[in-house]
Length: 367
Image 1 (tube, rainbow, N blue to C red):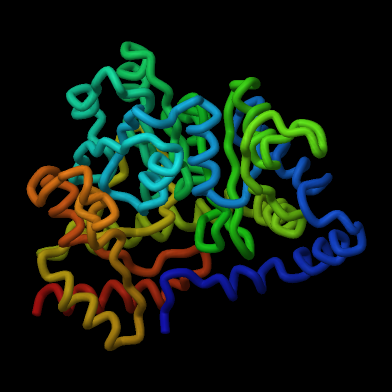
Image 2 (tube, rainbow, N blue to C red):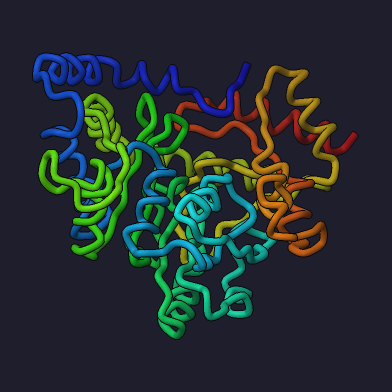
């Protein structure tokens, strides 16, 4: 099988480093938060170019707690994309607010920034652009709209660690950025984890309070919080991966370029494009085809993995039926969900494996 992502090979490439650090954590007796977590927060803040980085237990928690830290809740609306994992909208709902969906740019899958202003109401308090599949939305336009309407901008950068927009790191482009350390992410651990990046010291202080049951001093609680702390072993592993992330992302970019050059000339195959001013880090490499099912079946027959991200847009999910969206409301997102699929791309994909993927797609698309 040629997998979408080869975590086993990635682990083997840094196994000695990981085992040594894990032993050090175990010997320390400090397993939650502590010095390894503090070091990770410092290094990520420096990497992203912000003053504050606050680790939490997942990317979903990063989004949810950031909304709460900005006092966004019941009766508020938050604008976002319908074409992403449900965690983005779920975080809005968990904070008590209502997600408002804006259609996407069909060439990239990113939220169409030009359509955001039409969805703003007196209840709108924030915009959450998703830096989908490893690249940034049109943040200049989004920030201009937000400034004009006094809205908070929270980047859902869970899929885009290491990406840049106009040479600025994703996660530094709005009021706050939220990342996931889920194992399949470009910068992933061996379990759940997340982090929030921001220059807002007040929000950073509140996030640190919220993640430990609303407490800024042990057993004294200023508000109702949650238990959302990063484990020291995850931090230790992520510190190792952080040393390799630029090299891994560059290899993803090289492989994506090779795919694009060979697949864009095949009839009935369209590659999602790299948006202007972006350095895409290709968390996923996605294609579009009206012949998706046959191509994916052909890949499977040759023991090549493929997947659909995402088969049903958020506005059509049963969980959001009370919002009264219907089929046809957001046509670009709906069409993409019917045609998109992803193929193997990771830093350890060999040239031979990539060539095999390309040839199977070529044959299937032309048959």
